[in-house]
Image (cartoon, rainbow over all chains, first blue to last red; front, side):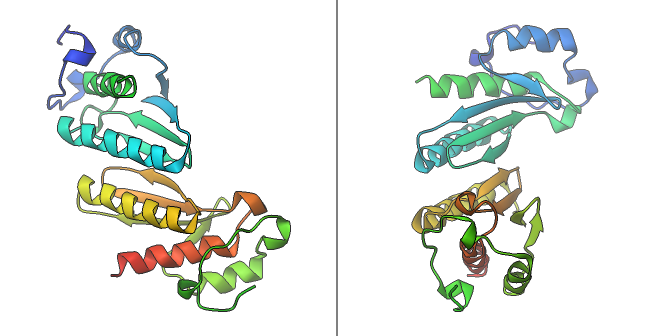
Length: 111
Length: 111
């Protein structure tokens, strides 16, 4: 597994349980993120916005990133909030790709 | 309450429990819709798409309608599916506005 900082890494195709992160790996990677937590075995964070247009534009920015990395989160979209949840179907749990995308979304909102 | 067909109606500001629909009214309005159901006291339908881009473009079309009608659904967005759920916070349940927007989304997908 790459040891480069998450934010500098890119998603790559991962398939099979050998790419599934174990608890110590998850704990270590969570330390590189801010505000993300594990909920129902998904990497999860809520983002809040002033109005619906801002909310929807954020959804589109996340979607652009999802397409570029070919890794797509589940989104729950309300009037002023978006819940982002990553997991990796092809490994049956969490993979490094989930954390890479979380770091990139975090960076996006900090621009 | 207006008796015009849902699709010809427009959302208007509704506030207070007197605008909350009762069960017979809900059943009558559901007959004007196709594929919608009541789940957890919300008017609910899943839409499926071939790929993520189509999914996200549908989200944007729904958002455009939501802004125009000033009535915003909750959305659950996956890779190839969107769950749309309407309710009306200001009446504490379902209002005619939820059914108007559902009819318009249905019409949108039938264009």
